[in-house]
Amino acid sequence: MKIKKIIIITSIIIAIFLLIYIFLFFDGIKNYKNEKFYTIGNEKIPTITAIVGQRKIDYIKSNEKKNIETKIIKYKNIKNANSDVQNYVSELIDNQNFINTTDINLNADTGNIKLAKQSSDKDKIILLTIDYKKESYTIKIQKGLGSIRNY
Image (cartoon, rainbow, N blue to C red; front, top):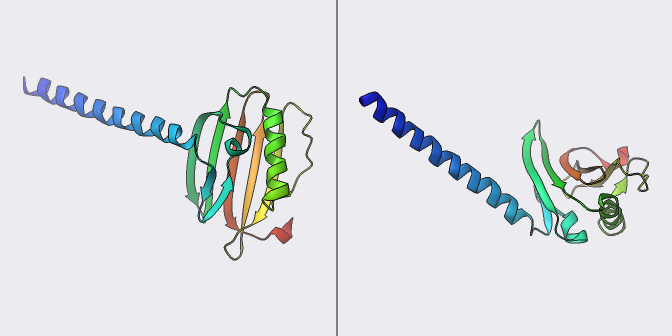
């Protein structure tokens, strides 16, 4: 009888924690959809949705390893990923002081674009990578030691 109570209580506790996790995760994505900027450290970079309109977020990941801050945002179910990426890259290069560090072929259905910008923090750089496919794209922003002069 005692073991049965322990199992029931443990199951209830696990279910509660699972519900809390699900609520926080999906609420975080819902709230992130309306953000105008990606924030990494003290840097603010316009979100792709601030430029092209609201898009469906698949997941968001953030971490810091070896003094490199990383944020990854994956968007899915995009009607025209190529057009979104073109508009976003144009905004970053024309108005946000990013430079292109790779050959860009925005006419391709899939691709990888790497941009860089000097951080406002001394001796740090911001790298922004966009991997895109026909109906999705992933934006990866990293901030760490480096200089734009290397590009």
